[in-house]
Image 1 (cartoon, rainbow, N blue to C red):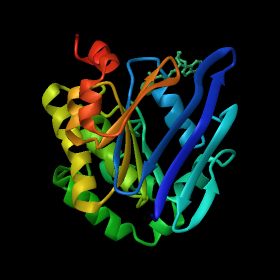
Image 2 (image 1 turned 90 degrees about the vertical axis):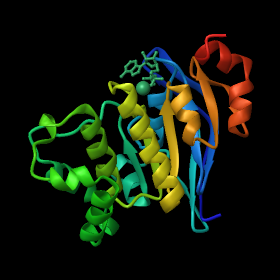
Image 3 (image 1 turned 45 degrees about the horizontal axis):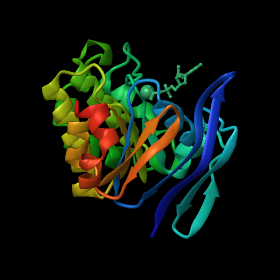
Image 4 (image 1 turned 30 degrees about the horizontal axis):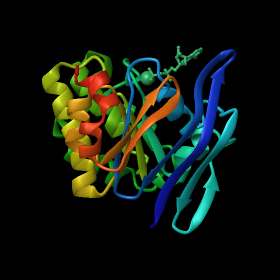
Length: 243
Ligand SMILES: Nc1ncnc2c1ncn2[C@@H]1O[C@H](COP(=O)(O)OP(=O)(O)O)[C@@H](O)[C@H]1O
Ligand SMILES: [Mg+2]
């Protein structure tokens, strides 16, 4: 396997607030793995540990890439992007007063990506044609769904091997949620992109996820081998399916 992310027994805290406790997950090449959890259960914190924005207090995060295993703990965000791990942050975090194209260029700072800007930009525009039409528009003046497309495209500009997406559905209408999730699924199906996606929208998530984990109070409460196991799990039924 050319790519594997292995998180083992990771804990993290904000001062006295414990956000993660002994979390172990893995993501293998070509998978779409869901990180399910309702608000405040640690999804974003785990994503931030993976991208070097939060330093775990315990545990290991190892990325195996083409036969080399790299420890991500202690590396900075830029380093981690350079290794090929890009994140679409919760709430999109665009620069509203920059154009679509300028926002995309900001995603291309990874050295390997800089050499391939034109190719990556073409790929983004092919994936999201509306962004090509609107490349000169200020990002802040676009609809929520379009802004989410810019955020995903910006992550793609670093030509990632592993794409982390933190709650893409936040603040979007149901139709746009479904279109956004479908696009993420398409990146996996058509282009083999490996994806770890944090979500609370269970029904949309299982449309594209191969398997998943459920985070409750900072711990992995359930791990599924496939989507059927997720759908049939009592905890999931209680949390998401109103059982
Ligand atoms: N910057 C922060 N400072 C203090 N506490 C935080 C901070 N960010 C998150 N938390 C707390 O950590 C826990 C997990 O939050 P988070 O990872 O954002 O969950 P989720 O993404 O699942 O909603 C929550 O109790 C939250 O209040
Ligand atoms: Mg979050």
